[in-house]
Length: 168
Ligand SMILES: Cc1cc2nc3c(=O)[nH]c(=O)nc-3n(C[C@H](O)[C@H](O)[C@H](O)COP(=O)(O)O)c2cc1C
Image 1 (cartoon, rainbow, N blue to C red):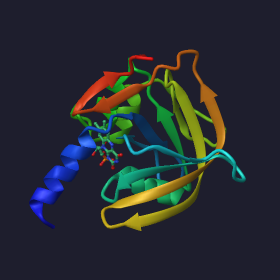
Image 2 (cartoon, rainbow, N blue to C red; image 1 turned 45 degrees about the vertical axis):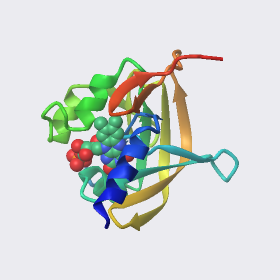
Image 3 (tube, rainbow, N blue to C red; image 1 turned 90 degrees about the vertical axis):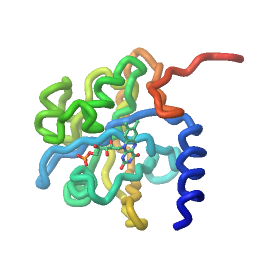
């Protein structure tokens, strides 16, 4: 690939502020979790609502989701950037068991880890997965949503954690 095209792509996408979530999974493959900014709503009106998440193929969380066939998208609250760092391995925690020992959580109805304090928790059955070049694109059927009392979500843009400000 043209390195300049890649550089401009990465810089352009860094300007697209997104919310921050932790994708967690538990089951026969074990318990894993990874910080993601690729969480996207797909449809509110199918059989179930659906969402997608893109996770690098080398992530142990991606491998585990494929086997566990379920995951949880924990949309972080604006005060949870430390949780984002833990599940991004930025606090020196490569071990996923250690990551979960640092953060309060409990299993949801499908047994998927619900992170305490997340502003919204979407528990999903894996509907389908597409392996695209470097990433797995996971589409989940949402079977349950837990909402906290505080809707303020953590954002990430221009390589920093941010919060949304109302300018209307
Ligand atoms: C704000 C933020 C957003 C991220 N978004 C993604 C993402 O959407 N997909 C992905 O594969 N990795 C993403 N990452 C990187 C992973 O969190 C990181 O590579 C993690 O260490 C992978 O852990 P694992 O390989 O142990 O599963 C993001 C990291 C941060 C800090």
